[in-house]
Image (cartoon, rainbow over all chains, first blue to last red):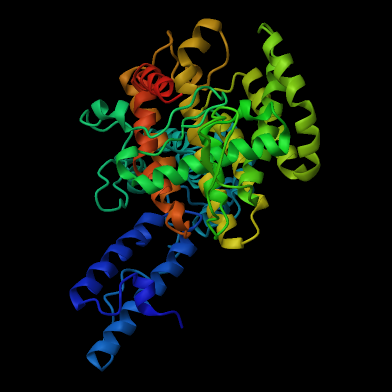
Length: 213
Length: 297
């Protein structure tokens, strides 16, 4: 097994407090919230498991008996929730939408989901169609199209909480993990960093001339 | 690519800065040695950044060598390695196809492009034999982009996807599976970010020349500037891609290059994006940089 101290990046002489701090910092970094709907979520989950196991091992070693780590969501698996959306029924469209929802929620093929969505004629595309198209776009990282799709879904069905929360989540620009000392989280936030810009760059680029700094 | 990817200087130690410069000079040397004298013309920092993402686990030893730009004092640079070779090859292939694209574009002065194309021809023909996959991806995605441009594509995500896929194609050359997945995602969003930032940067020129620019259609612009609301909407897309790059970065150990990459994905890209949206990218950064260059040269 890998050295648990190495996993937490602390020396084996570290105090309990230092170990807890290192563990928390890593858990914050690889927390499932940071990898929600991310194609690399499984890798982050692996990291989380490693960190939890390492912390657990150190705790056990130091206390002399078994003590579970707080476990920040390491063993979580994405549980599929039974679809209870609005477009229920047995029509062909409803079945297609059901299939798409299944594919999107279970991390299936986005190409296939898109092909299925395209089968529904434009005149019959309702709120659920827009929402699912938004999910397909979001999974691809096409956040602008996803937003427009969610907006269309919300406009067609303003009372739907799922559609609304998808749109809110996207608009919120939710704060992601940042390493200690890094405060910036948006291209557009505040004005305080603007003045620093000119002196912030390390390098320059003379349009590709023979040039090294 | 276009030189938008920059680390944030205050975040780096002197050692980190020197190492990154040595990678840049190493790429310049690699381009020269591998592709001939004319190839360093296509050099920029985006490709130096690409090379450090691809860097082998052994850092390698920096050499001090004279070069064309600094024949007397010389510069520290890394000797050729697979990452520098791949970054150099990709930059030749991309530059070649972008030149071919510019040559088929109606209404632009062709002299410069013909000259550069002529200079790059041999280098391109040699490179394409080693990197047929990247060549095919580049050609296909630039063709797709051209098609979308001609069709006046009204979204920004779809044209951005072409450049994103093109760049993420570099990851196909990475053997280690986890690293390949991490880089595929990282480079997809780096390509997407570069495309969107470039579109914002070119907006005014494209509007006045009547060229395609995805932001004009997307935001139904009536002049060459983005409204505050449009800026915020665009920033949402830029931020999202930056966050996904950062999340990917944390899943692989980039060794000695971690501080440089960290400073790019947690600060540098935000700062560049903001300066492009504020239209200070060229006025605030370039003259200052140019003055500094003169002093140093």
